[in-house]
Image (tube, rainbow, N blue to C red):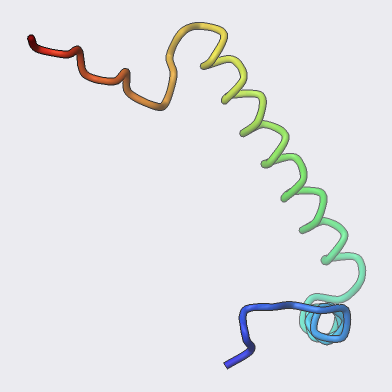
Length: 64
């Protein structure tokens, strides 16, 4: 329907609709919460990699 691309006009329309529904103060709180969630997720991923708990499984060993 949209061709898979979001340009500046589409993003502005989405922002305007979000401002109408949530208001400027609530939208700021939502943005802060989303930013904190992303920051915590990245920190957890980094801690998991440092501890050797990789999310991707090791490749299977060759059987010859």
